[in-house]
Length: 249
Image (cartoon, rainbow, N blue to C red; front, side, top):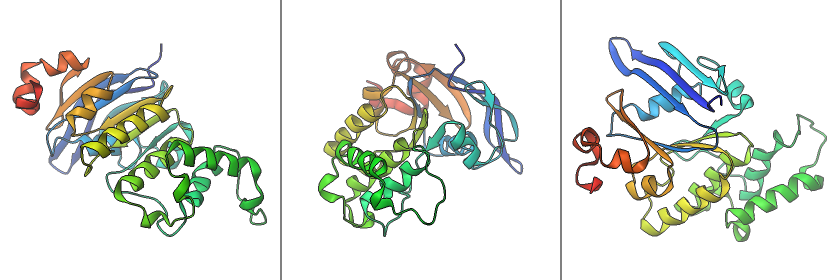
């Protein structure tokens, strides 16, 4: 079966500085795949290459067998791949409900129409209300998104990313800055709302990684040093030496 996402000998350099060095990776459809590695390993740069925010220096990135390297983020999004960011990104002055309605416009077939009043669009509003419930934000529907707690903002951003309907979802450190309880709730949310989708995430919390991922890839200074099932990666001496250390035990 054609993989959902395939990288073949991908390189990225900034001048003489090589950041990504020959990464090759296949991610199966419906898989939950974590990319881990120390700070400065190139994980976010790799996400930026996949999602079109940066051009590759060489190599191929394919979405469902179709090359997408060096395409614009908008074109890649419409081909079925979306992502979140380390820094929370949504319309802070809009309500939680309106943020969700914005995310749902394109996948529900709405296009630019200045005469349309969204309050009268029953299908759109019903879908937004369903997402409010899934994200446990119904009680906060009319609150400005910027006034939510940090964990609620993260939940909203993850929801906005997935609600757009893309089949391949990239999450960049979705539990960063959370305490254990918040991270556990966010992990459960990710597991629930990404069912049936292909999930690729960058994450530093090993409890989240080993509790959620079907496979794990380890990136160290731009090189992929291991990729496999969580148990295999946990026991890999090279991974323990390069990154996991005592946490691997």
